[in-house]
Length: 635
Image (cartoon, rainbow, N blue to C red):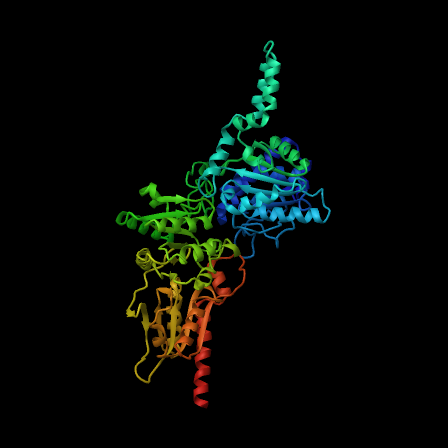
């Protein structure tokens, strides 16, 4: 790492020769494989942008020139070139974030990790530069071809193209993939640009060949040159961008430093909006990634650096349980179709796609379109299952509300990685879904506590044909099955260690939401050791609140709700409202995630920090019960 250790900031790159730059690129790839294999992280995307990032920092003067990344998971090389070379704590508490982080460096302008937003930021920054008289400060937005499938990117392009004198460079990092291969009309267009020989080379050949042709050669060349736009569209159809009014440069070999610097230098000097189309290879230089057809090691856990194989084998996870059940449902019902937003493998729909290739729809990074398209499918008699990460459903809220729920359509939304997810940081914690969905009329929301309940509640969800249904579950390995002792209304009774007959009431009713069941049962054990009796129920469907809950609550002295979701507007709030409506006047304590953006750390570390562990909950409940007992004695 002789060269890399000498790079403390972007301007250190200026002193390197072409040969040294090429050697630095290889050093960086070796560093990434060695370090990311120890911690896990986004390996493939960063291996693909090594030369591109070096070229960006040689041509542009960060942070004076703003360099933005979308979605940010390809920013590891940027971190290395801006002085952050301690990757030992990558994505762990106190270590480097897996995305740009303004707390880490002045070179990190934005820390977005939801796709397709960077062009909007760039448009705003360029407008601000213009208003402030900074005409010599270009804004550079690096966006992947996958992120260009998002509608927000095209809304931004529409505005960017309107200003011919704002220096804004859009670098399309085209590796033909988001997580998996990019699909759709835009992907086909970019593929055409990749594979076409190109207008400039054709015109150069034509000039030489035609000018050597006697009599008509020169005249024919001039005619063709006058028809440049039409010929250009025929030879290399970049007209889609130029018709918007945005200069197009490319395609450029994204691993050729000389070609990259030349193209970026031209773009910098243009003075208006320019697209530089760079062809890169995800996972480049790492054999295990290059041969991984699924996602080119988009994101990895701890792996063996030489083989790329996981160091530890995990148990069955929530995602695979969903994937297996979807295949079973697909065999039983021909009306079941799957929808994914560019995340076929991460959300577990790949087995369904393999079994039923005509019944799966990948809409690209376009969650809003996924929801409305699902509404159309449901209107015509099919039952769509839309699988996304919980944090990404936020984008489609209006469509869930107005296009699915208002029309009383049977669409099932499956939310993977709900609750605290940990290492990806604030943007990926799925802590808002049960709050924002509470306000949707008619919507039904299930939170399964284990694999058996996930299978059962997914089946219950797809039976609903007159309202949207939601099934949400956690990230990672599924724990052991949590058995039920029986049913109270539609709720599963998980534990009961006190009497609740006649005038005698148990002390605490614990309403356990989804994967928090083991924590709630452990809490009950700790309370029992203090002589406090408990009933623990899993409502299974947390929206609407089960009609039997108020009556059950009235047989206790205290109600406690525990959820892996934000406290504001969550299940605890809905339960409290239901008790008030039923004139059940009891103390209620709602335990959940505070409305804060949580830094990256392990799930267990975050749960401990926010007090969402059994000892923390038991301590607070014990204090509450003690106060109630003291008040009763005084009365």
